[in-house]
Length: 163
Ligand SMILES: CC(C)(COP(=O)(O)OP(=O)(O)OC[C@H]1O[C@@H](n2cnc3c(N)ncnc32)[C@H](O)[C@@H]1OP(=O)(O)O)[C@@H](O)C(=O)NCCC(=O)NCCS
Image (cartoon, rainbow, N blue to C red; front, side, top):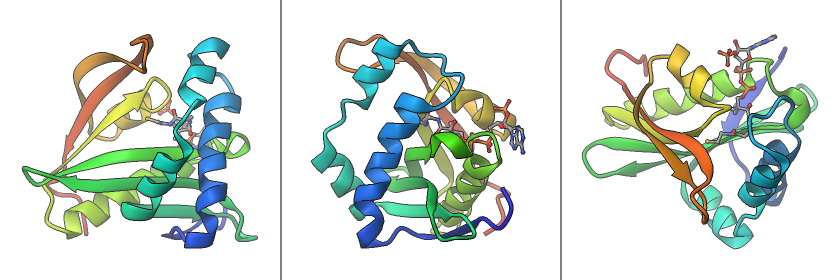
């Protein structure tokens, strides 16, 4: 996407950001999950997601008009590990490089803060992108309340990522 601008998510954008996450789950093209699985995944605890987006390091991607088109959030954990909690791109803006730009911003931020690895629980949408960019699968998992949403616990060692 041309003229993508990255910056901290503003407080007034948080409600829109939660909507964007839900839309990206429900309406993203070529999903590898069934409609029933997507509906289950999108049945989020809105207050919890709002709190996490406010409390964590959250990067927003905006287009030339300033419209929010994607976001990523991460949080530091023990063992100098960063946890990639959210990475969502608006349905109409997927496959234009937004997700990769957000991922790279998270990796730089985490590296700058002295963290040595980035882990995530990646959806089947995110898994190939991560694999192409230095992340590997630690374990294949089934997520969600009914343990029927395939995903993968993944990691990248951040050594060498430029801050
Ligand atoms: C997973 C997700 C964040 C990826 O974001 P994205 O913006 O689509 O990612 P990118 O465009 O950077 O890369 C995705 C693919 O598009 C390709 N691509 C990038 N720019 C492109 C362009 N201009 N034209 C065509 N394809 C392009 C990339 O090569 C990549 O292909 P690959 O997956 O085969 O490696 C997004 O699909 C999404 O929000 N999905 C729904 C929610 C989700 O699963 N989030 C993860 C939660 S764990």
